[in-house]
Length: 188
Length: 171
Image: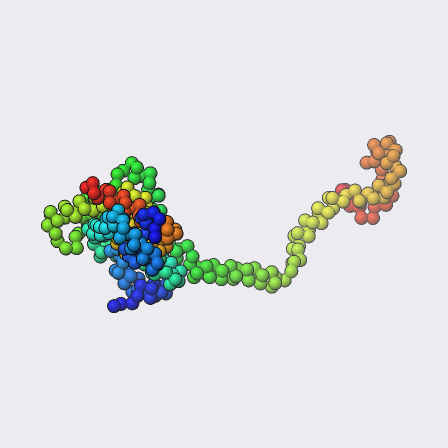
C-alpha cells in the first residue's frame, strides 16, 4: 500500500519528480483506455492522455482535496478529450474513425502485454472495434458517463463532477447511453 | 412508490447510491414491475460488457509512453522558462540601473561650459563686424528725418558722417 493519490498530488505540487512518475505508473493504463474509448483512436488517446498528465503536473497545486483525486484528474482528461474531439470534428467527417491497424506507430507502441495467439488477438481487435462502433453512436457526455461508470466505477455524483453537470443530468446521460448500447449489442 | 418507471434510478440503485427511503421504494417497485427488472439486469450486463471490452484495448509500450511524456513535459517547462527567466530579467534591470547611474554621474561631474577657443572668438568678431556695419554709420542713421527726403535717401551713399572715431580706412 503506497501513498494515496492525494498525497502524491501534494508532492507533485512541490515538484517531486518521483511522485509524478509514481502517479503516472498508477493511472496510465486507465487514463489511456478511457481516452481511447472516448476518442476511438489510439494515437490521439496517447497524445491526449499524456497531455492530461502534463496538466496534472502543472495544476497539482490547485487540487484542494475537496474531491477525490481521480474525480479531479479524470475531469482534466475528459475535458481534454472533448476539446480534442471538437477541434477535430471537421476532420473526422472526412476521414473515418481509425482502426488500430491504421496507426503508423502501432507496431512500435502496441505490443500486447501478454502474448496471445493470432485468433485471440483478432477477437480482441474485433471486440474493441465493436466497442468503438457502439460508443460512436453516443454523445461525448453519454459516452464519458458510461465509461466512467463501467471502467472506474464512478457514482452518478462523481460523473456529474467530471462532466460539470447536475447529478440528475448525469443519470440521464447514463441511462440513455445504456439504452443505446443495449440495443447495439443486441444487434451484434 | 414510483409513479413511473424509475429508469434513471436503476444504475444508482445497482451501486447503492440511492438514499435509504428511495432504495426501499425502488425495491418495492421492482418486485411488481417485470419491465424494470429486465431493464436493471440488462443495464448491469451492458456495464459489465463495456468494462470487459475496455480492458481489451491493447496497451502501448509504457516505456515509450513514459519517455514521450517526459520529453513533452521537459519541452513544456523549457517553454515556460523561455517565457519568463527571472535571472535574465534581473540582469537587464541591473544593466539599465548602471547605465542610468553613469549618465547621472557624467552630468554631475562635468565642469560646466568651457571658454570658447581663440579661433572661435576671431570668427565671431569678424561676423559681428560684418553684421553691424550699419551701426558704424549710426550718426547718419540717427537723422531719421533725412529718411523722409527721397533725394537724401537716393544719395545716402555719398553722405559723409560727421565723425568716425573707429572707422577703418579703405573699408
